[in-house]
Length: 173
Image 1 (cartoon, rainbow, N blue to C red):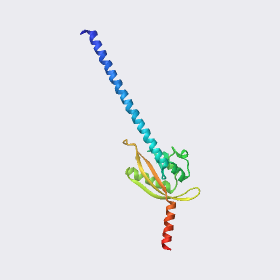
Image 2: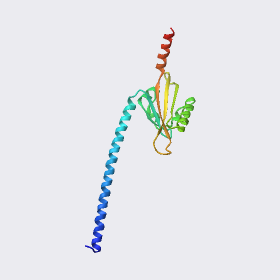
Image 3: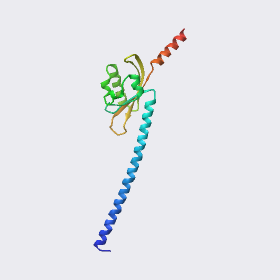
Image 4: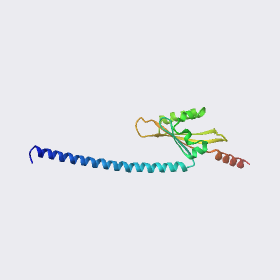
């Protein structure tokens, strides 16, 4: 009909079509988000498996300096449990020269987030002295102004240095 009732019916039908199209777009978006979530979960499990099975120690911090990741190798090398330090600020856990080294790394990485900071450090652990090769890189979350976290990867090179010294003495002999 061309009267007011016909106009009202057409408007109602158009509104119902719009609602149906909006609902379809919403369902499509939910499906895409579910697939992305599954992919993120898969990647997270993959990264967790890699971190738990490499021999290098890995510790990461967020932009506020709070420790977020400690792998099994780091726990074994440092004689710590991840639960003891997760969520704590890394700067509160180090003292003396190590505090200065951490500040140096933070300054260098803040200036150039793509830079890598590398040092050899000697640690006195509970039962032994150890030498570590430490590499730190910035970890950005991708947003502007989000700051930079850190990823520290370290290797215990104590035994390697002993073997190298022994080889050098053999060569001298």
